[in-house]
Amino acid sequence: MKESAKSRTTFVVIAAIARTALNLAMNRQWSGLEKLPSGGFIAAPNHCTEIDPLVVGHMFYNQKRAPHFLAKAGLFKVPVVGWVLHATQQIPVERSTAGANRSLQLAQEIVGKGGAIIIYPEGTLTRDPDLWPMKGHTGAARLALEGGIPVVPVAHWGAHEVFPRYGKRFHLFPRKTARVVVGEPVDLSAFEGRPLDKATLTGATEAIMDAITHLLAELRAEVPPVERWDPAKQQQSTHGRFVERGQQPEGGTETP
Image (tube, rainbow, N blue to C red; front, side):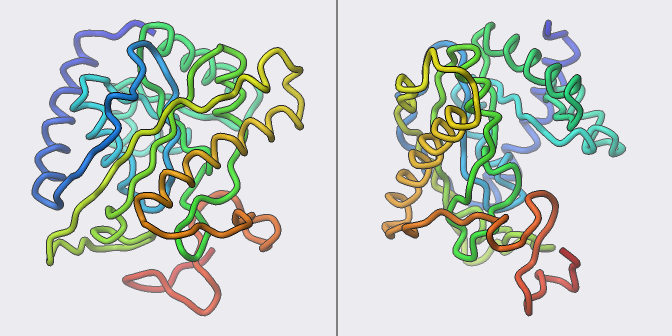
């Protein structure tokens, strides 16, 4: 995927707007930046609020690493939003086999050129009531093992206080701080050379989620749950918006 002059210009303009807005909305505290690989890599962050991509993307962009997200294909059809996603070379994720293969191919091309691919292993905002990382999907692990690509765990905390999960308004005062920490690349050597079957991909995904959870526990100075939240066991969908029974999202009624 060759980056055009139009893409670079659009990225610069969008980044300038987003950085200005984020700097006005909250303080930032970043650590572990020296652990970012010099070449291409996959970043795997936790996901607890809709503005996560802006917070994580801000950090990567400031390190001169243009962030490329795997985003739901439906977003590319939304007016304005879709144009921005296409213009900045974000990667649509399709549910069909052909679409999924194309997404992986595009991701591999970006990584091959030293780019950063950001994949949320949870696939959507965490269902965990206390916002701990929930059970992950295997896409990041598959891409990493197929291409020999390092996976860098990333944890962040604080942005949810500015814009709560499923919120409809920002809480700018008192001023909050979004903290982001980068960890060492996940050791996936135990899974290399093995068939990419369910056991291999599940094990590698668990290793990635463990690394993310460990970083978040340090940020929060709290002990995470012994068992990771599994939407399937809770009879919850793994896609789309979700609200716990008996609760309403900020600003009105929401249907899961």
